[in-house]
Image 1 (cartoon, rainbow, N blue to C red):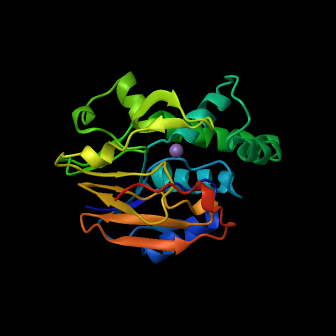
Image 2 (image 1 turned 120 degrees about the vertical axis):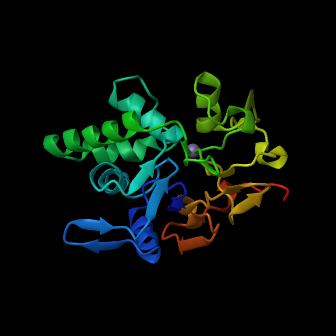
Image 3 (image 1 turned 30 degrees about the vertical axis):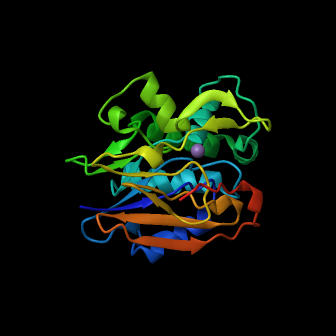
Length: 247
Ligand SMILES: [Mn+2]
């Protein structure tokens, strides 16, 4: 099986469609068809900030649940949207306000359908994806070697938020440790969550969140070839949103 893993989409539907086309996923009368032996993997953060979060939910639902040619693992924005849908008191900021506005603009039956589709996706999703021999692991914000194969609270925090210390920076963002720098495991780990200007290969890991929603690119990496495929963003460029790691 060949996996085409796609980074953080954040409502950038047009770019997602462009990337799928570039990767050879063809649309026929019944929707997408994958190239032979290919599956697409979504590493989370489907929604928020971008122009069409509802469209992205519908597309990912179709590929994962209906056509069964996709795999989805959730990101922190997905976790928050799930809490929103189940009626938790989530703050409408840090991106979800755009998804909230899109949802409120829908008629009642469309709203119910999108909610149902997202709940199906989210509630069926594993915290992270491993292929049969664990040569590939896909986790939204990454995972440390000792957590691969495990479940539970520690794993949950890591895959959603990365290696956070609990401290915050002066601007309110959490202090995140560069776990990839010391990673020495055998599994190839594909993750996103922290926007970088180009895919960051470090040890046996790659960060493919190239900040599409901030005017960067939407990136996919293929496994096992590790080939990168990208499309340019159609969103305005916000330089300050991109992290610089020492290579
Ligand atoms: Mn994220």
